[in-house]
Length: 243
Image 1 (cartoon, helix red, strand yellow):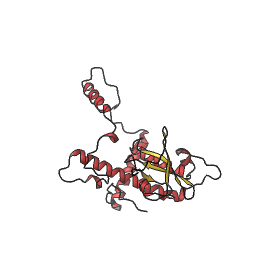
Image 2 (tube, helix red, strand yellow; image 1 turned 90 degrees about the vertical axis):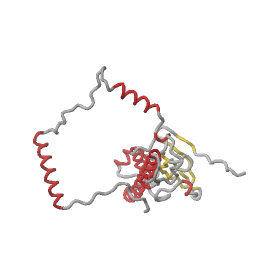
Image 3 (cartoon, rainbow, N blue to C red; image 1 turned 60 degrees about the vertical axis):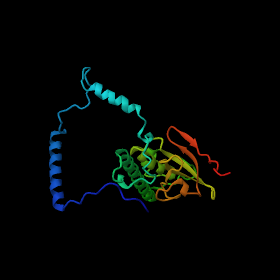
Image 4 (tube, rainbow, N blue to C red; image 1 turned 90 degrees about the horizontal axis):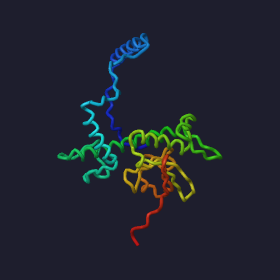
């Protein structure tokens, strides 16, 4: 299956001698912890309430108020120079503004992460696909994990929740029901709306597609529903621009 290179740089493999030394040191530390029955305390309580006369509190609360008044990061205006294709790992031309570099890096890494998740679920589905049988049951994430697998609507939850856990916002990642008119097949996929009109499609089982194409690249499939835990939308065909 195709996918992009992970954005994370792998460290060189340590030598066997170094591994032996590290293992021994780790065992020693564990032995000390086991002997005392408790971990080592840092000597600090990090989450105590500030006093009423704390000199830092006005400065902190002022920043909090201004930060909370801003829109979510997904709603901030990306510079026009950041193209829809993004840039590899935030590489921008010389002289780019910090805003341009930030949004380029963010866009490229989010695509890399989403493609890695797509690759992973399409690989794992081969060993964890479990058809429902006569009754179509939509599992929860916990039911899917407890059963060690499910069909498309259960496996899709791993993608949906994982992307949300990675920081994709609740108004950009949705579950989607798609339909193939040629044979009447319905399917569940994850839709990532990096742009509002043409989402990326992650198919957990690979029955519809592999990789991570856009919905416009799948003309034989029609999107029907878009939903989450607290929202539901019906997909309507847009009227043709040409009359």
